[in-house]
Image 1 (tube, rainbow, N blue to C red):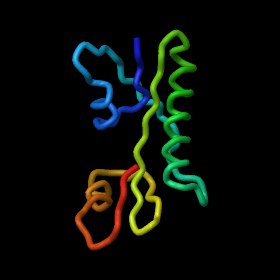
Image 2: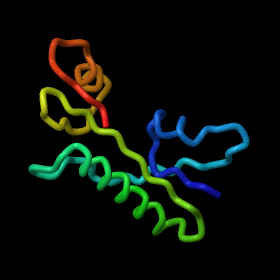
Image 3: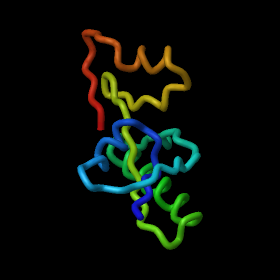
Length: 100
């Protein structure tokens, strides 16, 4: 059985193909970027840490970690703590934003 170590809807959609079976088990790890960490390195580290945390609890399953980070004006934003902050992260603006 495949176990997805992320509760995010976008991550679930990557696994949801016809005939696929998987379970979702959030990892509950700290998701703050490290000082000076690039967006790519942060997303890769968090995905890896999530997979490892869940794999410790599910050693006989295949575990997939996934993560998304947001960069605005070259600044890596931390995870939004609530729906209001999440909307502000992705609100239309004249700034440059990317999601990795």
